[in-house]
Image (cartoon, rainbow over the protein chains, first blue to last red):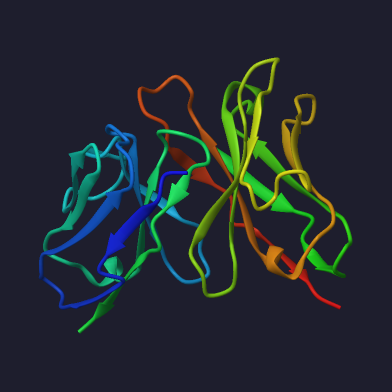
Length: 107
Length: 122
């Protein structure tokens, strides 16, 4: 199975900040890497697919990069509604696997 | 508009069985890859199972549920199912269904239901 490791596990930031979350795969996943946002009590929401493609309707302050084993999610100009938990997920091979999540909190 | 609605969760004793349903609207389930993903209380997301599109309906499972859970769909009802047998305490979670479009270059779950809660406890 492909293991996904996210860092950091938690992050404190302020409105207007720029933050970066990293995700490392134990094997190459090419660009089969997706990012999801989840708020408490809600279903995950797709933000980025194919490592760097912005899902329709998602604000452009979200961006993704990387390929192979190393990926990043960057959120520029943090807004109050961005404080949530973020997960990376590889769709290169079953079993699909998720990172452990990054909890983004307000400083 | 595209929607997924999960039902069938509840409180069940260890060793028991439960069948979850995921009713789709706005698209045809058989044309998409459909997955179940679960989230234990206070934990992260865990992929459970997938059924591919088309008549073959190839399926895959996480090792943690293989041999106990069965994913299926009823095309006439446009509904996805997860039959869960021999349930354990560690199966306690919110269960989400999600779709993937097999026609895109990379695979991603773009539509999710709101989830149904399964609690396995005596």
